[in-house]
Image 1: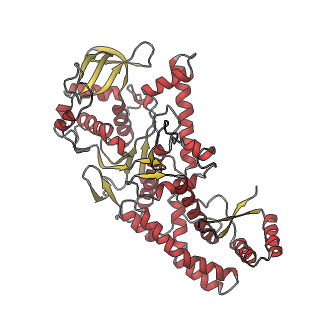
Image 2: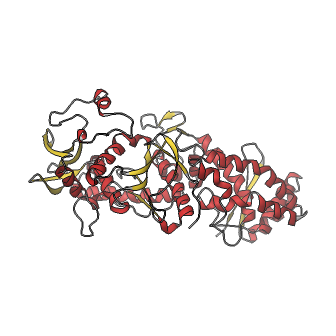
Image 3: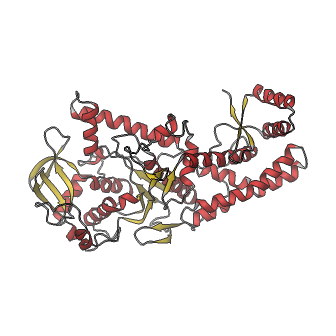
Length: 498
């Protein structure tokens, strides 16, 4: 296990950056809210997955891969899912239609996130597996709801849509601490009419009765058997407790989840388990807009991750997953991000430059346990990638100059020593953190020097020698591609021909 204690994270609960101190350094635990699988994930959904994937990688480096547990749920029971199932499969029984919708969209979500370079979480529980009591004793929603009722934190009521079990917000003295609004402020700012069956307008649903044509489970509350389905918030509380315990270290998600979702998670979890907290650190990534506007289907700027990766709907072309990933990381995770074609092009050009240099350092096997000391700014400063990028760009001129000399066979030993002292230290950490993907296809230092020499021949308009090198590399299975960077300078990339 690495001996490193400099990670600092912004905690929404305390409104400040704090030293990260896990409850148990031998078992760091993180939960992030996952997708509701009624449709393909849009690019806004991708941002928290990428942000917390980087944090997951950092935690694994600091505490050891075997000492970090990361759970991210899949919500596969929701009214939006029901509506999509009826729309897409009107001739099937509802439960069969729901199964088809959730299977397809969940599989696509995991494929999209893998294409963005994200590791799979340690656990990816599905909500429907945690509704009723389980044989393995893991926390379930019905038992949590029953406990809340027994402790006076929830009650059974009959509304216009049938019977409901509601959480009693006034039973919790500090409800609203995460979002920074007390209960009276929330009541005053309510935009919905008070429902007569609620004791308080802020009371929220834990369980709601299902109609005959809606999915449901049989559960008994206050002696009444109610065929129904869980509310959204109780799902995450049950799944988090199942894999991380009653309290854990980090809970993450988008800013839009602070209220009501995360606020209500805290309320029901703390009141059920009798704890003074649910998670120690609450982290939230900023909103995403597209080309300066809010993403909306009505504006025609609504893009799924699949659209960006596999179709030509964005900028008239497909975009590599690593380019999309870098485009997301170029803005601090807590700041709003403007997702645009120009941003994708900028990320692609940055990656092209990095790869051009980094591939010259590639050995037969990348050392993923590299020294991360030069990335201490990221570890110490709330995932501050901007400082990291600044460090990298400051090294580009020096590294490029060194390789120009190397390409002309001058003092190669001196150049290699300089490489080890600067850029080379960044290569393995960038791969480790999932920012740069260089594992699958590599070329040797000698082959890269040929690429550099060819560029020099092209600059001298020596087309014969340039073509000779192209053909020589092609014979070795390396296909060259010529292009220009954002400054109009000629660049050459390559790919391994299978």
